[in-house]
Image 1: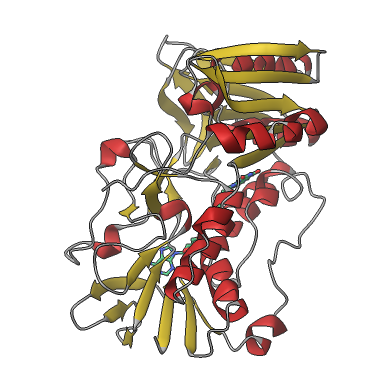
Image 2 (image 1 turned 120 degrees about the vertical axis):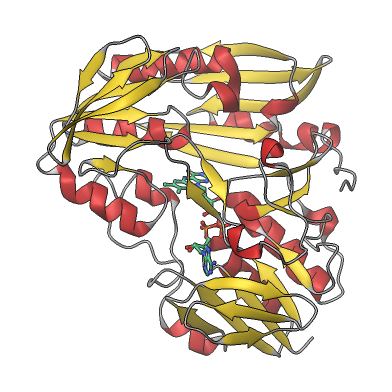
Length: 394
Ligand code: FAD
């Protein structure tokens, strides 16, 4: 391999480039990104950045890319790929060749169909999104956050911190229902209510109410209207794979979450084409290929992929899946795979601290804690045994 082209200059793309150099790769290495910003970290955007506590989200200093001989090409999108000729078409009308192509294009936020693009309505995926949101916080008073997933919950905490009235709307019965189930969701609901968040669970959004070209509220499916001068839509994201249309690179079905289908090293069935991070549907412990939208996963996949590209097998080093979420003064930590569980036990509940065990046929498959880092991490060894490596699918 003499030229690796990585498309998507986010966390997974950057980590892949770093791991290739660390693994001794000396060939040409291009990291191509459509944003006009060098690789940055997304987790702070819904936390410290929105609270106004940091501006610095860069993952590496500017000189790093020269030092590592990584050619960083920003502000250019890949628009298509010819896998037979091993060439990627670019938005500036040129093409880039490759020996190995790594697809790391991440996700874009899902929008509510038919919702007009009026001022005061935000999504949060990119630094540009976060900047637009933060700029409006000085003048906004009443916020509605649509969707109580991790990002919606973190933003609710951040906007309360900034002194806004916050209503959190979620069609499921509790916050974090899809990720952590109703039992833990109820504890998270209690936390937000104790912080003055108005929770509206079990009801979806019907439409936005507008006044001129600004948002003035949200109409719910039960007919009620909540006034708002700021609305954030946090209803999940979809993988960025439209640029692969017609390339013959197999994708997972949209109903399965979509994304680029790979083996357990990130290789697709197309020679020389790999995928990593949020966009990649690797084999998963749930028994089929599935995308994972979390920070630690992106780095671990990058390690395995870069090694495999260089002919080294590092699959056995993959750790038990880990996710964190900061809300108020509380750190929620998820170790293992809650989606495998058929039973959730709340083991400890001390208000803002709690611990839950997720079991499948009586066997521990995940631990979730709030401000219980020691107890969560203690389960790592046991989880490593129960969650044996996933089999190859697809
Ligand atoms: P991305 O970071 O999305 O990078 C993909 C890049 O590819 C983007 O820059 C995109 O613009 C670019 N791109 C897309 N299409 C093209 C194209 N055609 N050509 C060129 N470039 C393209 N995870 C946690 O575990 N804990 C957290 O607390 C947490 N907080 C988060 C908070 C927020 C606000 C967000 C958005 C995510 C959070 N995550 C968190 C998830 C974590 O940030 C992601 O898992 C991680 O960013 C995935 O990296 P990625 O490189 O796969 O995708």
